[in-house]
Length: 492
Image (cartoon, rainbow, N blue to C red; front, side):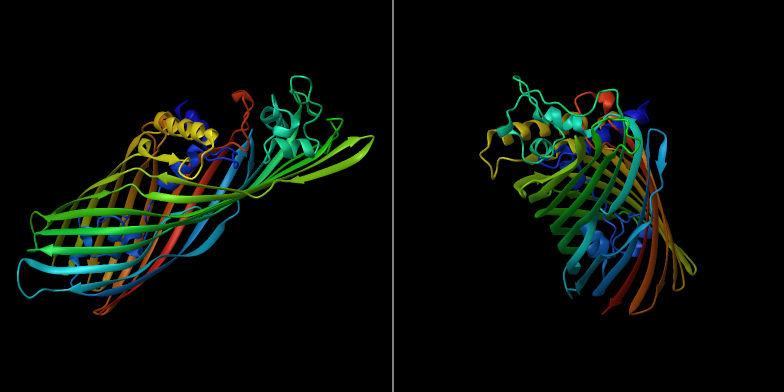
């Protein structure tokens, strides 16, 4: 029962609502998972008490204080995603979608003071990818209900001149809804009992790339401290094509409906990360970091189109497109706190480490500000409603990340495991596992690393929402993501 509740919670969150902001915006842009270098990826993203890896600039910037040389690093990667979708017993197998990315690139500049307790002071600049939105899936099924119900619900109670331009007005202009009575109740060609063949293609892309300026120092070889200023650049794009057909001619007036939705969200933000690492003994280290909320300024650009084929004396087809919509707003993500412990050991020619990170994030602290650039009272009402949903439907979570590395001469072998907590209050204590591994080669002035990560997630999706929850079209998505990264680093 708990898993079913979780699927429904996600499904409602990601249901179609392109003409306004939703709780999905808060969660989508708050759920980040930095990958960075192949070493960091192979070790499960768990190096919070160790450092000396460029990816620490996005996790615990105190790790920058562990550098003793200057370094340039670049990490291309390939992300492969496959989503199998299931609606009412019908499974649509997804296709593998692969994309080439740059997970990070940057430079660390080492400075070693000759006097005083400051043993090294390092500065860094570069970019880390902290979120990837790429995903494609399709579903189909023969189920009771139609998207025309949603259009009618959006229109009911309004006269024709006051229908919204992105759904209800499109439906009226293309003949999906018609003949409002004296109470402005609209009708469709469908009966509540009708079964309809439906399908949808969903294509999502984009990500968050964070420009980073980091500073780290080593105090007496006992304490490492660091601060990072982050400037994330966000881009999200979604294209959806929803189709209903009546090839067997079971619904007298209806032939085909096609509804297309497009959304692009882009913007910029800023945040600060600060951390420290304490060397308790030669082998044991502990660390901690705080990530401030990221404050974004975002703009949504969107439009919809609808075509409807029906029979009225003869076969007819009407099409209508919405105007281009645009809305500017602000979004604030939650705080994050990280506690880490690392153990290093060397025996003869073999050396290695084990590190564990606990991340705490309270997703209830995320929020939207829709009235910063708008004086519309409806935006104020929507803002209050969404932020109340965030507080009541999300929760705080603890993520566990464990990573390890074994070094023998110039070779490196790595492994990692993650348990990422679900952010939904309806699915408390549910975790998503991820597994990683990697290898590396070290020379005096350069190194080459390979990292691999795989994860599986089950999500729910609803193509459109209606007032009656029993008539929601619940699609169950099984997502498998695989990432392979390569890092080339040069020391100077």
